[in-house]
Image (cartoon, helix red, strand yellow):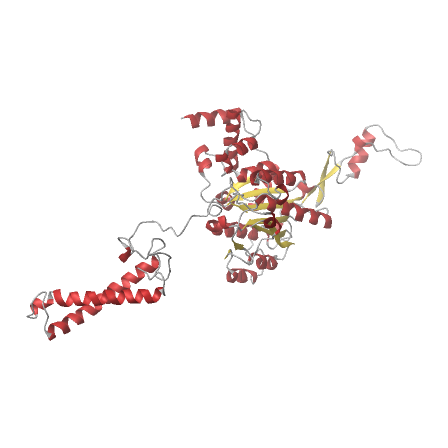
Length: 492
């Protein structure tokens, strides 16, 4: 029980003194020891009885008070949660408060509609136009990373020559994570092929041979006519650097997923530190996104950027993708050989639309639709994207359909689209409010041409970067047998 208006510590001391005094007087009157010392029960004891009762009473009361204080301090809920907390209103106890066993949930006020493990994506709060011109405050909120841990990791020097702690194969150390055959312009040429619409690097010997095989002969001046169908393209081998943009959600809804975020970033660190891969960080919350660290190979700079991340605010997920696209375009202006990979780490519960999609007085908030628009812009710009859902509770569809996360969501949305007569799974998600709550990662992956993954899938993979790159290259193909099997399973 607390003093609601005064000092809580003073109130607790007064309460203890009152309880001890009343208990001591009751012990003197009805102590069973009085019977053996010749005093009457419920009467005034003799002086020897008072001395004996006091000696016995002191250690018993000391143990009980310590037990009571420890129990009250450990409590996390209820009106008596923590004796050093002051509550407004009447300090009326309920049964069980004396020993910390009350079960009534603590309710300090009306619950927030925009904060929690799943932010409300259906009702964006009523915000004026000035909210959308404010940059997120990175100095407000709970720290995501322990600065002392980052300092310790920054002092560890990666041993590039012998492998050290970075857990990369010797052949790829000091190189990149992307195979050069995927980028088509780097490494050592090993063979040739017929090019597509765009020709990157001409393989001259095979091109000349193709022209001669067609019947072309050198002219009197020694010139050889080369046609478009004669051109052959070089195919390279080796590895090239990758530019990884970690887009980290630091909104308040991520407070319960902080350990998962640290694990995913640590996994990317182990696979990129010590190589030529460049890593950048974009953090988003409140009304926008900020580039905390430009892409770099110096992980000490990345550690300093991670130390600035603090959890608070709302979730502008679409704005984060637009910021990633802005950074990619800037990097491509510096070098046309940039190979970007956007890794979006979030619980995918957007509640803030793009600033340009909502004007003053606009009644239609579209955070989910804007998320699809932003992901499609990334896909149009040929940016690889991987969505990592760190919400530990998002395993329902994987368990129900016995498939990996992306395939399970794709199968579920395809079945819903077929039932509602829709042409695309994305339309099914946008049309059903129940799906919009939990299918944000699927929307980003489907519209952006990548894959979405659960935290457990990323941590169980042999290589997280390899998993992301493979998901950007392959496409899931659902057969009619898969649909019939899922429909039969769900109908039972």
